[in-house]
Length: 291
Ligand SMILES: [Zn+2]
Image 1: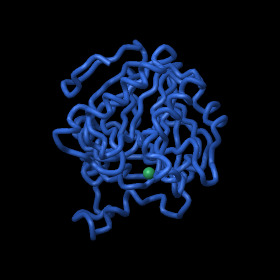
Image 2: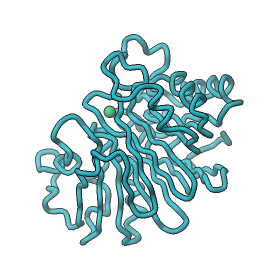
Image 3: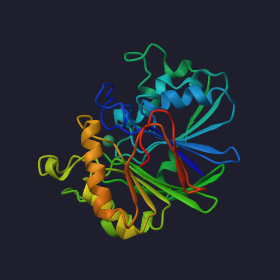
Image 4: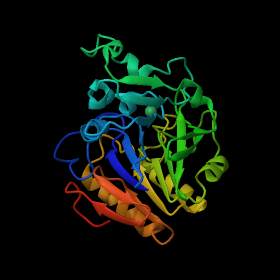
């Protein structure tokens, strides 16, 4: 099982000289197996580069969405497979609190994008009923879901195949002052023994209490959860748009100093591919160090 990060930024894309190391594209992670099966997690602007790769084949596409905030769907209108004749695309929406499970399509209703979703040549299927399920199967993978602690809801996913488990939990506030959809102990059960936990930590401790209730976690909260759950590695995503490369490197260094003996811990970099089968990590040209 290989995991590739195409977009790790939260809220809004952040091009510029201060974000070149960690990347400026919004949420998208790609998981793929040696047998050809694959699945996409979220459809932020990171999915645009992934689409440029996937349009070279004709395999059915499976996509799991956490929720419909812009940074998780805004790359979809520029995902090239949707313009391929009869390309099969199945989308599981997040379990959000309002009746808007097809928001990823409705953003292409005419006023904000020139192509209307009804005109798309691909065969796109929104699997609304699956968003309510605690577990389901897609080709190549078993999937478990858990409700996010985030304004208007959403879904976290555990994706397993070949004895490997990846937990994708974003956007999520572990210690929300509002009613919790999922408690700390329920998160421990959900992510237990994962080979990789991908979790939102948009905030540092200094960002609180101002941003309490905004639906995101802090670096140290997520690191403590990962250690308690005994996951093998933690990749932090949904980087704050104002967080520079220098600041993320500093945060990562502090986390590794404090928790590094218990697990591998990183602030995820766009362009990083992790081979969980080999338990090794290789980088594309976009990344420069060996962490
Ligand atoms: Zn969100």
